[in-house]
Length: 391
Image 1 (cartoon, rainbow, N blue to C red):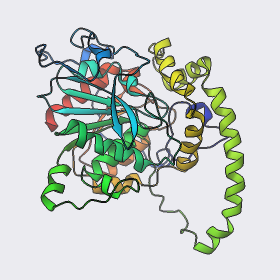
Image 2 (image 1 turned 135 degrees about the vertical axis):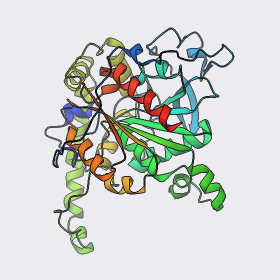
Image 3 (image 1 turned 90 degrees about the vertical axis):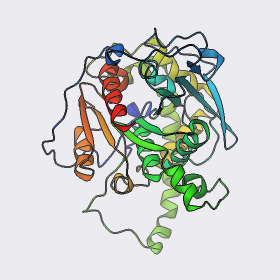
Image 4 (image 1 turned 135 degrees about the horizontal axis):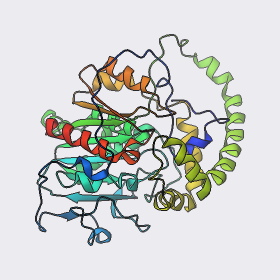
């Protein structure tokens, strides 16, 4: 997953693209046809209707929202609910019957929980749905720190363990897809113990097995990530790395200046709308003022520009873990709900995942990089069918 400063800032306002995902053969895989794109078209023929006692919301801001009757989540600038994680406030939402299996939705780069606006209400009619803003994005805190794929993996794993606390399927788009895969392949036992910011705690074998069992399924919607390149040169030795240190320092200074200028440009409403329409190539009808505002408002945070730089600088060559390795460690059902018209993460990425994880299911969606918002009906239908199989 490599970011080119000269050509990718158009996309960086929203999501990190994937390298490795752009290459590879396109073997013929059997894919299922898509469902209608209406947000409510994916509801089951006789959806459950929880009582008012069973209906649950994560904050007063959603107390008046009836997800049984409304297909679109409201944009609320003040946020939905708050979870304190490592001293930071994480914005999240929760809706649905707590007695049902859980589904955690993870957004992509530059987006927020609101990007699941057409999915959370519909899916909550059958399942207990959660969505959060990744640290550094949306309405979550934006601390000035190093950002890596491991940070967001730990956030997802800790959220499942601390807030959800029961069997969960994780689903993510773009960077959120990589986060979901990383969390699912790691299990809910190891991340906090492995983190540099968390105290290392010893767990009994029984405790680890219990925690690992919480994540039962994974859904990738045009997930980001890089694959191993068998033709890549061997890693540089320590001596060569030391010689490159000065060059990297100079490069970082130039990169910071370019990224800072680009951030100012890409956070303008007209520019955000333009970017969104490019990644919604089939139907841009859902690119509306609320979606644009949900991306613009977080960019006004005083730390937003610095966080933007740190995320790009750290992840510019892609998350440190390879998709190949994560799939090798994965031991849950996997669904690929793939927007086949994605201009950045091409279908070849899904093809490669299927090669590496043959038991995965794939549903082709007539949409671009954000199929869950461009064609929510088809995505909701695919997730509901998958959830029935997993839970």
